[in-house]
Image (cartoon, rainbow, N blue to C red; front, side, top):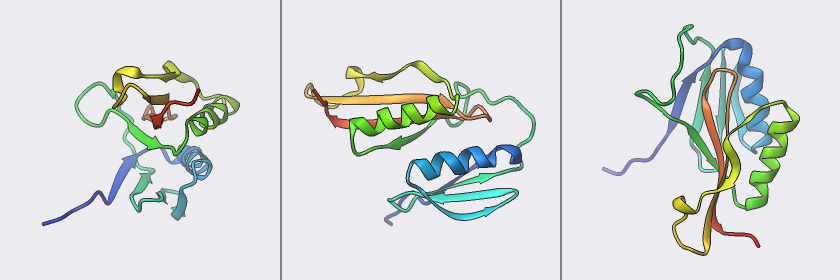
Length: 136
């Protein structure tokens, strides 16, 4: 059997669906479905994310059991900086001292793992990351 990743459903508050729509539009994903209770977006590799507006009002602890974060990869280090600027312009706080290079995550000494991390209004942790040759 050969399989691949197909989609994720993430439960969110319906009122926050516009946040995800705007963010993923900025990140270059295409909307494949949208109504007042559901948003579906698909990335270049065909994996889709479905934001279902039916979350129960319970705390989300991304360091507890379950998903820790969703990582979106970029093609260049500069695109992480563009995402960081987008977040700042929209009043979204960067977390954990990012944006930053993480040499401890790089696959080779000449490479970088350059990331910005942030939370959505539903406390879902996201990362925008570039891995590859470090820009001078």
